[in-house]
Length: 293
Length: 289
Image (cartoon, rainbow over all chains, first blue to last red; front, top):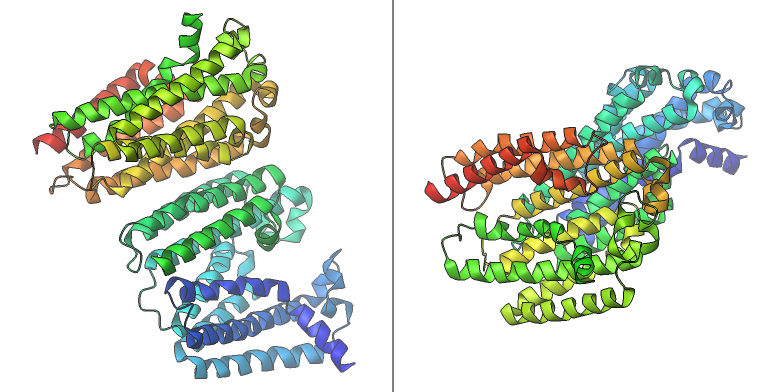
């Protein structure tokens, strides 16, 4: 009974979404601290605490939406909507988990705890209503990524984390968010309205234009990072990584436009072979340039 | 036969190789006759080398070219040039121009070999993969600029210009794909299989990425590049770049363009005037101030 409830609790906390927390590792990597066990351990702890905080947001979301989810063709199978997870358990976890993880965060780093709290509040506001406000919904999704990167930089005492990388991450997150909306719009068409109220405010042309804006800006912000960030090799070799970024962005656009993908970024991130290869090549080149030159 | 051979060498496309003069011009080295001579020789090598790659490309694509409304008249597709002639010419041209490149400067020889490598991989393989095909075209452009910077002994060639040149090259390549989709319509994939993977809306979005990036990287060059005058007067050349990009976009909407749409760069009077004015403005600002 107990282990069954715990299992349902974990399912409700959407472990798949925890993969987003790899963004917490960005400052560790780009601030050249990947070889210092102390910072690696702190970053892992931070990623764990962040997963607990973000997971409890889903608990609260499902608690408030349980009634509505019962009407939905697939969402009615969620543990809370189907009754496999009792409301008391979920409620208890929703109060205890964020309190405990945010308190523990204070010991890790007070700034980290503050960012965690801000993230928690923003995500709560999203679940409770802002997800229905056009543009704000995608901005909030993006803020989640930026706050993860910021959280990661507090626990590694990052001194030289380039502001361009923040800009780049924000734009990239906006791109993923708009791509997700476009996919939902393309797939659901007539039914889109009931599924997500905010979708009636968007149109494919508007989303295409917004995506064009953020993809161009991402490419430029990344290029600027490769020339002007402080801890890069002076021979500008970091520029060699631009083609991979360009390829990945174009490939993602291709998957959105031609294959109607983009609904769940994590599937593309792990599932599309050319995209994965390009990202791995990018990662290997970045590591090589940052750590060997 | 000789005439057919020369036609298959596509001398019109040699124009692309003028990209290699960028480091000479933007590095303020146009006043040094020695470097001009080296660059001119290197230009010649690149022209012959690119002709070798065009011969290979026409040899690989002969069957497909027969499905194209205008490419079917190319000497190889029409059968006016023997395949053996074309093959031997391609090998001969590559050997001679690579040897000359290594004699001129061994580093130029290496870049030229990479250039030929990219072009041949493109013909045989990369041209069939979505996105990689246009990235390969852009890579060839960057290698042209790198060749120019090696032979002009450029030390401070601005990285912005490399990035700007590659975005411009991507822009031209993507516009070409878009134009092919418009002109060939449902026959497009038969002529170029990779076109099945592209759509107009995807290309429009990719084009908007590269056009914005071209304009911004060029603007950044005008304030931050090496050798630009202190008073930021290089910024005066931005409007020409903007007009050029926008005019090119406009012309791409027309269905009656030449087979190689980039030919409008030298055929459309407003674009030509704009490019000439831009050239004069750049030369004046770099060399007179």
